[in-house]
Length: 228
Image (cartoon, rainbow, N blue to C red; front, side):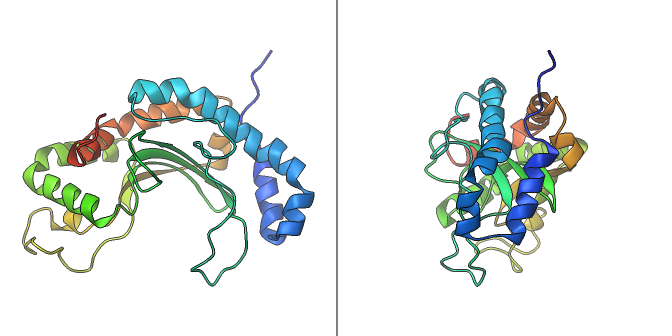
């Protein structure tokens, strides 16, 4: 018997419906569809990925729980946003470092949305102490960083995220890696298609892609004095 895919076009259809009905009343009335088409496939995917994640690093976690695990919650934090719609229009899955307390830590990520899907690895919006540690590590150990970036580029990943407009404090504008030192995020991203997401081999595909990011993950953990 053929193994079913984890996500299907119906998963994305639910996100389309949610976009047009982004309110708590509609979501509650359609909770069963969310469970069937989105959350259950996501939890099955996380469970299936656990072996590959641990193979990459035993310090990374793959926790198939509805709340408090690798599946990010569907509710938006709209406290500081003009957009007060209550639900995200994407599915976010993160396999993060076990020593980390929140999403702002080295980890692997899968983002699914109708306006774009991607695989990612690295660290997003690190707090100032961690960001400073990464910058000083790049300054003191440039070859390891450059090798990690070369591996990512060869595999079709690109570094993304926010950057400073001016050199960070303590670094000269003529530094050979000044553009890297200006980064506020160290996230490697590779776009994937909706069709790839809905294939039967999604777990094997993601496991292979995350292998390409291992040098970056190791480097970031080294910079932050974390095991990998």
